[in-house]
Length: 252
Image (cartoon, rainbow, N blue to C red; front, side):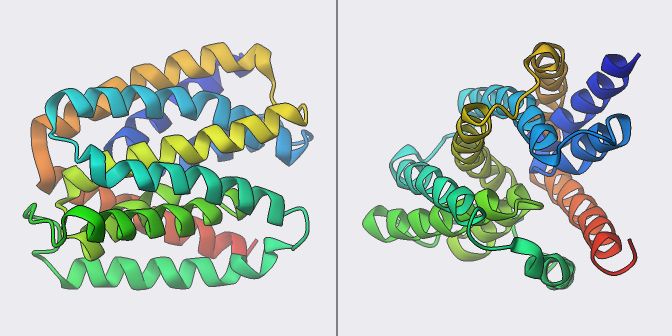
C-alpha cells in the first residue's frame, strides 16, 4: 500500500516538475507522511532517485520540440553541477536553518513581481547572445545550483524566473533551460546521497517509473498549451511554495 501512495505522488510530482518545476513540493511531503520515522536524508535521496529520471525525460521531450540554446545553456549546466556539490558540502559545515524564514519572503516577492508584470515571460526575446549569455547562464547555474545543494525548495521556480527576468526568455523556453540545469543539480545530489547510503533503492524503480509517466504528461501539456499555460502553472506552484514554506517557517 505504501508504494502505491508514494508512486501516485511521484507521478503527480513528475507532471508538475516537467511543466515548471516544484515537484518536490508534492513527493517529499508524501514521503515524510508515509515514513515519519525515516531519516530525512534518506527521504531526500529517495526523492532524487525518482526526480532525476522525470527531469531527464522532460528535458529530452522539450529538446525534440523546442529550439534549445545549447551553447548558452551548457555552461550553466556545468556550473549548476559544481554549485550543487559545493552547496551539499557546505550544508555539512553550516546550518541552513536561517533560510527557513527568509525563503517564503523571497518567494512572495517573486510571486508579486510576476503578477504585476503581466507581460513578463510571454514573448521569447533573449536579451543577450554569445559570451554575454553564457556568462549569465553560468552565474545562474552556479548560484541556484549551490542553493539546491544547500537547501533546495523552489529550485526549479528560481531557475525559471531568472531565465525569464534576466535573459528575456518566455516561460516555455525558460522551463526548458531550467530542466537542463535542474538535471545537473539532481545528478550531483543523487551521487552524494547514494555515496552516503541515503537512497531506498527498492522504492527507486516504481517511483522513477511513475515520475517518468507524469513527466511525459506534463511536458505534453506544456508543449501543447504553450507559454501562457506554463506561466499560470508557475504562479500556482510559487503560490503553493509560499504557503508551504511559510507554514514550515512560522507555524509548524
